[in-house]
Length: 151
Image 1 (cartoon, rainbow, N blue to C red):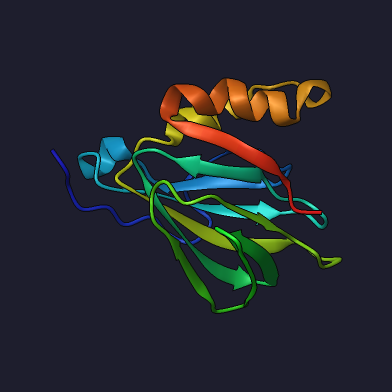
Image 2: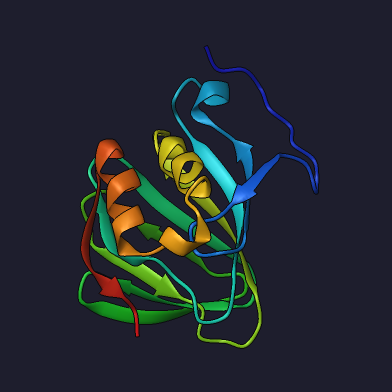
């Protein structure tokens, strides 16, 4: 059963994000009856996930600070501060922080369900971070790696 949620600035459970910066959950499926997962994520310079798809979730990003380069399907574009990007489930996508500064984004998954990926990935030792960790923690929740990170 979903109930209202109001998470203040600086509040939320923080874990290590899959590309190195902190990830702070603002709301999870447990709090929204499975309808939404939302978190703030910091993307360090030069970082981003490999090209991937989600079987069951649409994903969206709002760029709070900085800019990211996105690949969605076969198209690449820049998403600057204040930009909103939406990717329907099944669509290959990746992003990269090409700047020299950290980028802060709000990430939304509808419906929820990707929490297990991020929570599992946060436990991976730094020495084992890489494509194999994305596969190991992504496949059980319907995330498929379909290409390398953006170069």
